[in-house]
Figure 1: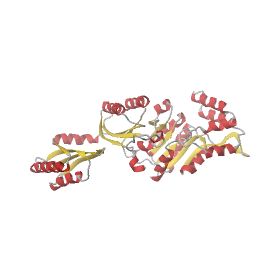
Figure 2: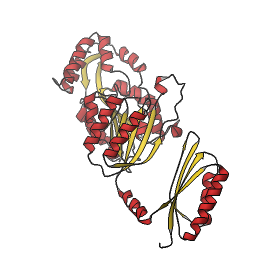
Figure 3: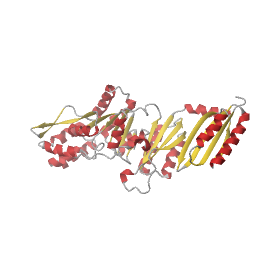
Figure 4: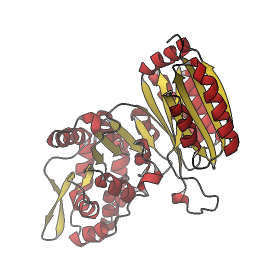
Length: 406
């Protein structure tokens, strides 16, 4: 390409119709080849970049002159930068490096938060290619706490130096700065998730049903003591489950009906599931809780699969026993694998969401495992976490934008 020339055009100013059409029309007149193009609009202000190659250097002067006149006519600013061909070739060569997506999610995102995240990205030898906002522009007058959220997505590229160090730093920021940070490889699986598996208690609903049942049976204190013993590692989940269910003996089935009719749904659950169902997702509930309540949610959300523990009921009363195998952490992971096989879905296409330690096995085998409003130890051992907003935060980790889904 001895006579060819590469030039970068940067245009900025008030956004208005026709700028891109006018400039590309001039380039087309001289048979220029567009090598790269990008455009953004921030508060009615245009930022447009076009990298083009012209085969005949004698045409470049005419192109620059006509673009300059047109930009003056449109009252926008323009800057021209010649690009060395070797420099361009080196830049193209770097495009083969791994790409990642960093998602920053919170009620609001401050300059300090963004600065610290991007500093960590830079220290890991990653370069930011683009930054986009996934949430709508925030209103200054919204008083509804649940309606306030902000999400920014960074597309980065490079050779990652130390993923463990990056994850540890991001985990520290989530505690210090009150934001959620997701780091994912930007590959075909991120854009082709097809199955989402939820824990139920304290994930899809805001309560632990067994605690409510225990309170109604007058054994709330004893059940909570067993739960705390299990959390301390003194007994395993299965043993704690048997002891707690035994204490519910004699409870009237009418209590289950009442609780099932008044389950407190987690913020963002309806929005998340309705969107995912519309685009063809399969939805599963894999719970250490009870099928009685999982089936109520199945009807509410059109859930495809429910696996939980079945309480034995005789003559309208709980017997203190259960039917079938206990759904513990290991069983949840097995069920996730089974559903993926039945649906002919790769594990990388599966999302798992839960809050407890018994959710970690399924969170860690899913392509995207998310600890939701979980304790620090659970968050530290999960791939991703959400603690700042409701369940619909999962949509932003998938790259959805408010403008497309609301």
